[in-house]
Amino acid sequence: MFRLVKNLKYLWNKFKGNNSEFWDNLEEELILNNVSVETTVKILKEIKEHSFKNDINDFEEIKNLLKNKLIEILSEGSQGQINTDKSQPFIILVAGVNGVGKTSSIAKMAWLFKNEGKSVIIAAADTFRAAAIEQIQFFGEKFGIEVIHHQRNSDPGAVVFDTIDSAVAKKTDIVIIDTAGRMQTSSNLMDELKKIKRIISKKTGSDPDESLLVIDSNIGQNAKSQAEIFHKVLDLTGIILTKADSTSKGGIVLTIKNDLGIPVKFITFGEKIDDISYFDPEKFAEMLVE
Image (tube, rainbow, N blue to C red):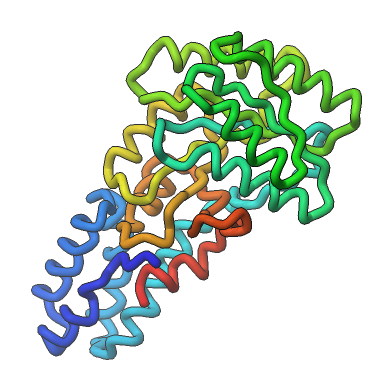
């Protein structure tokens, strides 16, 4: 699992007390672990002031102060909850660059909802990538989840159009839309996302209930760039954080939440279909600092 401040205990043992050199080293450690400078300053400012003012030299107490500050940042705004009952069908648009685990995350999310007693349809609107349709069909057939698809290289918007029609006719609870993996710098494909969003709005009278970006926890500061550009196109409501079972640096989550205001909604942490959970800021903060 994540270790955001893997050298915190080492630093505390090294300096044997609350002093400026310790805090300088902790600040450096946070930044090296993909926490932005702005977010690092926000995290440490109050903790440092409190620790110096109260002459705190207990490692566990500072560790708890740090954990509580991380929870505060990750929970700020209470945007992390998903209420799939607020509309029918509840539409989730999922985007992300190639290789982040987007399709498998969609399958895991659909399985999670199905186990909650919800009916789910997946729109296979990633019509450009080789085997993308087959991959999502495989998941659908294996786990009993309906997938609407057209031929490869067909119009993704038409897939979304037909999926929403089917969901409305069948009174399906949730529609999850898989979109083509794309680099954030690909203007043509980003325009395709805008088109899909317009189709959803035209069919339902509103934007998608959730617009989620899949972020690979290993990619570091590039994740912020991805989030910024996708956010401009989709007005993102959340992040699906993948590959949390790796040795990745979890600081990018704090950066995206603090700097961009985009909360994490789901986290995946393995290869099995049920290796997904709703994001829990408290549990996550504990993982980061343990």
